[in-house]
Image (cartoon, rainbow, N blue to C red; front, side, top):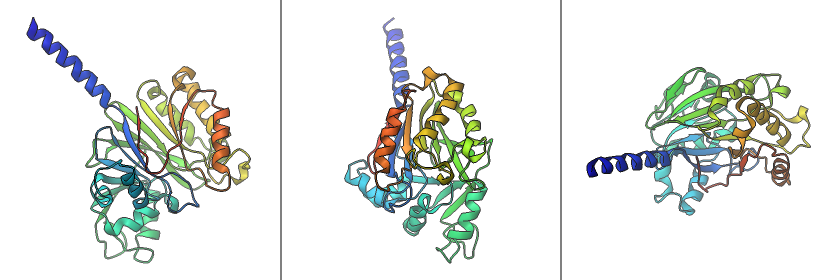
Length: 315
């Protein structure tokens, strides 16, 4: 009987321990959109208690790592984080504020993969790693290809393991000022998911169904499996629709999340972690965006405003 009881207790403890490990650790390396070249979109993400990170976008890299080290997020020097902790880059679209840090720091980096859509990778080949803008440190394109980074092209409707990590990724294409393209990444570890949006405009303005497609896909995950959503809000509500340039305001942000609520159930949205990304640092934009989001949060979302170099967990 004692043996059975002990085995049962071990089983229960191990279940609780595994449950406690669900979710993701996030280290923001850059949180703003355009105009702050030391703090541009880049988020290190790993399963809780793992140091095998991916970097979702790479606008700012080493400056963010240095701030994280100063905040005691990592117990190792910044160069170790860059070279050993970041296992891969997932680039949502080829605008400078989402990849310039990755490109500039590639010379000092170690071998790793760059994941992205065909559109994104072809732009990297043609415009960045081409020996004119920057040495070609990748495995394809202009000669000589130095083969430090390897391109991994992602197509829709496929789930791909992210090498050297415990995570996998599925992509959805976004409209970023039609006809230009961006990407959303659905990251999976075990039974936990994280949804990261690159820059995107609302379906109604973009004359698109890209957001609606994503909401339909993730609605079944909202109640218990979706640890969080990263979604941009670039401008306050005063920004005219014709001047959004493929971005969201608080009004459009909430309209889009209400589409998800209609599919998943309003009750399931209460307390859902939503990380606000890509706020433009012009004038008082950030304070206005925060106030407008707070006043229109009828869904009861847990709105998270990330700070560069300060880690948090999503569960």
